[in-house]
Image: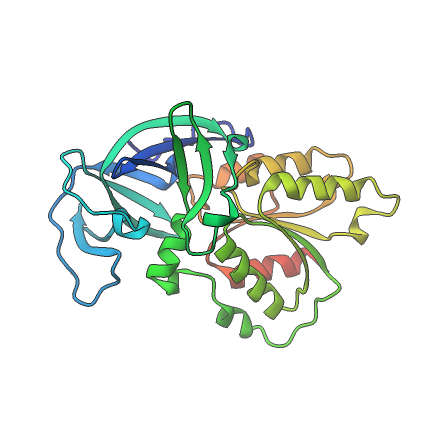
Length: 300
């Protein structure tokens, strides 16, 4: 598997390619554009006093990468499997290896086939952000960003970056934000509030955000009186951020709203996808200070 996988999809179609892997006999999914390659297990060097989810380090073509055991993350029994694989992944400007028991196939699906998990297991620490129902099984979409924030809090969004901007009052500036991860939604709310942006409507997927925006577009008053800017993640159940942006930019009223894509998937290889759907800016998580700077440019 190489870096071009997933980029083959036309931007804004609300589709993704998902690598399906197994831990024990349970099926889980990861967006293929997070996957650099899938390799056979190799020698792991243990790290003293490391996080319980981290098995150790491997060396891969000169790079030293941490190995995260997905069985430990998901609270399942570890086992030695002849089909075990290492999924080499990159997001949030970091590379990490996930040890899984098997990799089975790649599915192309629509984001609207991914259902929000029930409240029972959709909490901040559950690590599950969506469910894909198949005829004979379910595939659970894993929140890899939250897993990495738990292991390494420095990889998350930090208020300290925003505090350096000094006292600010932006309470009258209205923003719509679409972010599916409960943990990252909480962190985003804390940092935007610290930056003075207190009037933010949050949605857990692009479909709900679009429905809200379209309802505002039907009002007689100008759209700018209700919202000044949209922030969106890319990976979200029901409707992803690229498709949300495309729908906003093709709407006769909403198209004037600036859209900032704030995602762990902003890389040089994938930046063109956001440009194709008309996003004004694209900021990689967790560069929250850069996000605030970009917001300031558009919300005057």
